[in-house]
Length: 357
Ligand code: NAD
Image 1 (tube, helix red, strand yellow):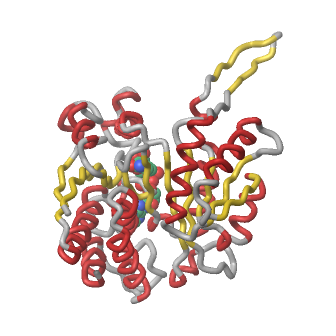
Image 2 (cartoon, rainbow, N blue to C red):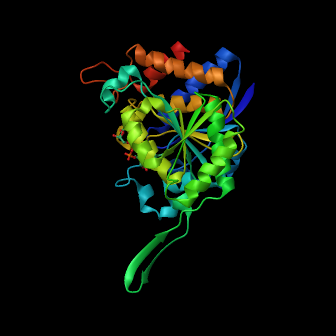
Image 3 (cartoon, rainbow, N blue to C red):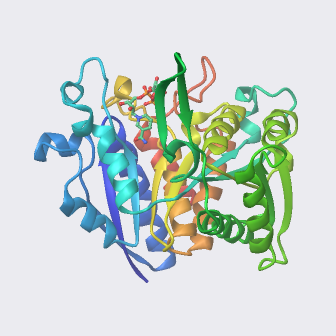
């Protein structure tokens, strides 16, 4: 099959790590008989340097016309980069917010998994292997509600509004159940239904959606309990479904539980199959151009892209298995190597993944 992939190399280590992901995708294409056509899209500082703005309308159109979007990371060193002399709406990060809005990316997927070989980095003593994915609602809730700060009876008072309608809840719940069908068929929906009306509506709608997926088990968990369970017994989770603010906090907690943030991928999806896939980490300007960045988070993001946007599950499995074998065989980039342990550069690790595929 033929697929059109928009590639956003971005800034800092972005071009180095996306080059490795593209190399791996090419290996998958050769093995499984696909054709991936790549179109480069400028976003962030790279776009400011050429067009004076972090994202052009043409770039958005190219992204929209593709089957999926693979991104490195964007942004520079805020203290030294000229991009940060610009007003906030013209800085690199504004381009990312603009593309998320233009593509209506309402579902954020953040996997967190523990590789046995990297257990030493996990801050949880004696943790069993875990493999979970957090499905976070990204465009509603507290972060997007009306807000104001004003004096009320001589006292400064601030109000933020938390609101969800049933349609917003339904579409994210459907995403979570669809994802669960491709994984361990277990959804834990996280809310605060003992206090919040939005959470009670959340539960009701999630239960309605669950009726359409009889193979998937659904549990509800209060957010405070979930925060404890993540460090107590992370292996119990498969898919965590939650609203915007809870997901923001829990996904950072879950990624810290792995101890290897540089290995974690992410995806943002809309109602169609289109999605934007990127590593969870930033553009690491401190190591850009040195050839030592860890490309695995981006390579694993490419695997997510195959699974969730292109429905190429077997090919996605092949990338994930190759990453696992690379780690099992003891190959490391410097960020995950133990002190004194030998390590490989960005390109060499990419080559190992290609070999294993
Ligand atoms: P960062 O994730 O870029 O770097 C934090 C530390 O982790 C650095 O020491 C870096 O060298 C290291 N690191 C990160 N990724 C690595 C990798 N793949 N391999 C090896 N080491 C790695 O976070 P930061 O320094 O806070 O941010 C740098 C820039 O990235 C900023 O401009 C920020 O706005 C941007 N950023 C972008 C995104 C995105 O594109 N979605 C996300 C987060 C931060």
